[in-house]
Amino acid sequence: MVILSKEIGITVKKASDLSEWYTQVVTKAELADYSPMKGFIVLRPYGYSIWESIKEHLDSRLKESGHSNAYFPLLIPESFLKKEASHFAGFTPEVFWVTHAGENLLSERLAIRPTSETIINDAYSRWIRSWRDLPLLINVWNSVLRAEITATKPFLRTSEFLWQEGHTVHSSKEEADQEVMMILGFYRELIEQQLAVPVLAGYKSEREKFVGALYTTTLEAMMPDGKAIQMGTSHNLGQNFSKPFEIKFLGKDEQTYYAWTTSWGVSWRLISAMIMLHGDDRGLIIPPRIAPIQIVIVPIYFKEGSKASIITKAQRVADTLRNAGLRLRLDTRDQYTPGWKFNDWEMKGVPLRIEVGPRDVDRNELTLVRRDTFQKTIVNDVRLVEQTKKCLEEIQTSLYTKASDALKASIRQAENYEHLRKLLDEKGGFVRACWCESEECEDAMKTETGATIRTLPFDDESVFAACVKCGRVGKKVVYLARAY
Image 1 (tube, rainbow, N blue to C red):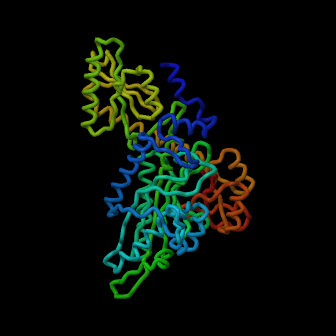
Image 2: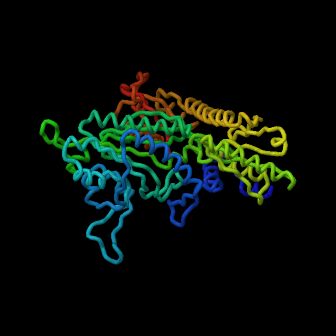
Image 3: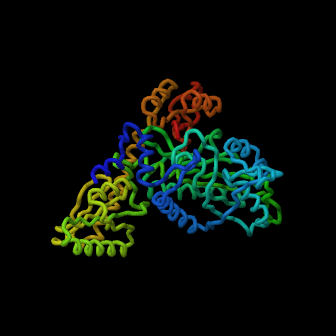
């Protein structure tokens, strides 16, 4: 058993080779597997259960705020994508095309959904007639395909990925603005309070915004290797889609107006950030609030005579905690030793382990072991539920605090271009700098450093220097980083 445990364990240190560590965690913790097609993965049951936890939390928030779920076709006519010129230009390089039905050549190419703005807005043009039909608030859970063949990595960058995309219609820009910010708030709550991943929030630059949007808001996280991950975006599309798709409504004043639309989304990329940020050399660490299995109960017995009483107590503990609303697994597999089980569940990142051994039965006690620190706590049976819930919240808080401290430490300030390049090359992270708002400077920085403007803060920060690239007057404080 010891040899088997070593064979299935993580064989590289996270700090020395994050990429290989990440790949091993994803596959050995049984989150996902590779498929025969490059850029596509198989989402295994344990990985899917994490996505379900994310989905259930966000879905409830959306429904509470009046949004409804729907589903739209996977295939989109090429003519639909062309209706919004910048949208078409931005997505065409990533599109998979269907050209045949059986052996018959189609009269028009069909795009396999890279995003759903066009097919959904076509439907909205038929559904909306007057102000009474607004706002229209629809969310979709689906998968999309974008041709990502070269730099693939499970959950982080794949050709097909699971996500949700919301598409709403409003009577005014002000209502659309409110929708954009409300959704970004839902995303931030999910990411920070459930996944324990701290983020920077703000606007995307004109160059980096969603193609076809009036503006884009974003949440950006920082990973241990100094690269940023875009965690979620919410866009005000203005009337850029309503005009070509003829989404009009009759106002209260009997005048006809073009509607204002929004779109927004998060994907299973959230899982990749959670893995990289919280995991350690033993594998995953999943924050308790989002963990599909919050607790694993492991009976420990070495003599057949003590097995029955230990299993009985372990089952009683499981029933008590389930009745208290906690998600758990009782591991009674006889084919594995307790030590093997410890390693297995540590690999899978279950936040809390409860050990039930002979002394625990005799003393009416239990042993709680935290996954993040491996700290052991002995608790009396009477205080089981109270102490277990307390421990789970302490783990949640500790993971967020540790990640938040790392995010703050990753932000450094550059006052000139040489300093910017040095900071990016040495440690990466977010670099706070001033920018003149010219796209020439933005493009040059991207080409020469590999870094992009990740976000412009919602509340303008005081300009402290000249433009970091050209030396002209600085107009905006921005946060740059290299990114996945």
